[in-house]
Length: 383
Image 1 (spheres, rainbow, N blue to C red):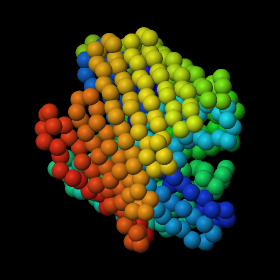
Image 2 (cartoon, one colour; image 1 turned 90 degrees about the horizontal axis):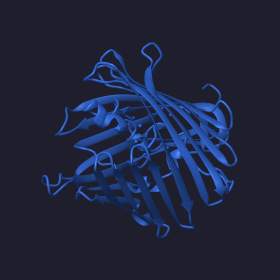
Image 3 (spheres, helix red, strand yellow; image 1 turned 120 degrees about the vertical axis):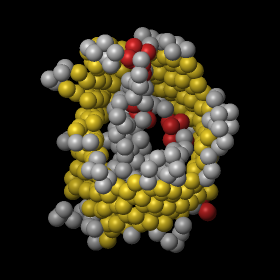
């Protein structure tokens, strides 16, 4: 069972003297199976409204100047995910979002032409303009803003982080990340569409020296008594071995029956870390599902991974092979993947030094179903 923390992947008057960096987080990919347990029962789409992230960006502040560098295409626009907490303790088990390291190798393709302009206004505030021209969906424009607070826990962690993105129709996606204590990270993610709240997520993570605990509520409605509530725990039984469990309780409205359906499920997980590799296995007995992955870092610039997902209840099984290659001298990163259905995807991210720009090319498709899509490109301009 893949829990929801994140899939969804994803920026004062007081100056901060030590340099700090507000990094982009990866989209919350481990959420993608959250609603899968009701798919057969509900007979419809099992996915909640997507909380779309803002465009990738990275802000770096040092002294009295603000510089910005583009983040990689698979990085989210907001800040370093509060669930991605690093530790120097060898017994720290990591976080639930870090279980399948192979996710870092998967390309994040997009459709059409995309241009992003980012402008830093102060040490703590920046704005962005996102233009998209796509063949499969209408062209769009989005305005975004990011604020990085003054509570600095380390040189790479500054809180609170407030981000928002709005289109001309008034649709808004917002996130708030904060650390109330040095061992906790809390988040609020909301999406407002067509004059109403489309999606909401609340979560808190706790990091101990040998354990990680997480609680998440997705689309909670106390009046209707519906929502999805998830708990995760990871324990380091050895410096390189972590085990954990997941519990999920959900009450959702059945579209056909017109009544609320309740379901309780859970799963177990184990992860082993080698010197330059890691292997993870997740199992959900009630859903008869299995999710395994293997990641191997071949050298400083190359990594390969494989992922296997099986759902016994649905009779589905898929495997994905991913590869990542960095060319340091060319400031270029290539990511590619192919799955058992012959769906392929590739992204090439190139920094256009000395210009404050980066160019991203992507290609995706399935030769069995349709011709492979032509190359799409994205341009990031940073000022």
